[in-house]
Image (cartoon, rainbow, N blue to C red; front, side):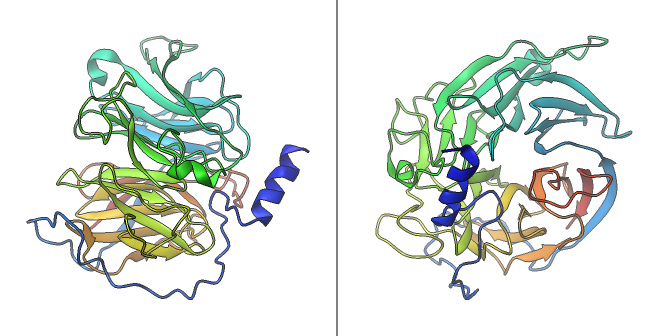
Length: 379
């Protein structure tokens, strides 16, 4: 059986793909907010309404961009899912420079070169981390970025940090980020094998937390000898922390509900037993949910007291104002249809965001200048 036929059969059986889940039988109703959510912040809630202004287009002509990592000097690194290349973008001029390719990337379906992160001690170690799909698995590797070279490859040989994350033509996860605790977090997908999400011995369908070397931290995880931090996830696409150092994650639903979750160690987020705010003992419901036609969420960022969530199929940017572990008001959407599919959003300092479009991922309708990096002003 060919890969294309296998993927078609999977989708026909109800398996969703990256941003193209059908809305199913959802009626669009909203459930009451979870009044039992823990750890309500003492800080005031974000205003119910916000505002977004596109300040400028930073760069154009990107090929299947996925991960975006700001550098300490304000410039950006962006990954290309389908080519395996990493480019440096001058944030002022928009000039793009290819700094190297990640060896071993196998781009197929939703796999390829995905998330990027720079070391918390980048000024000293110059390390860039990448999450990517190979012929056998998804893995995380780090490379030294030598930007002093005048030309040619500026990335050193990859040092594998973590291997063995199950791969598939769909649901590879891929977002990585360093938390306030200086640990490396990764969001994974269940690779189309639903049962892996509830298997604590599998790295699929999880949020992982590890040292920068890829080892279990020894403290803070449910099991001291495991990198598994939370489970019961379908396909985690966004990771971000609020001002109280609480972790948030966005996640693809199947046919009915996409999710924004408040993550705590050892919690089970329900997949495949529940989707959206369905209740089941021992499983944690999301803080917010959306019809899949309105979201298919990818990257998230926290800024001005709100979670900002990029939507692929929904082709819009969502703002979710926060109050502790709950949302303070109904989500508000911006830029609907203005720039097509939206892949990644990253904080660019208080009141500003970087936003990456995703028209060239095989599911969009790219224009002459796609894909792009935009700089937004938000409130």
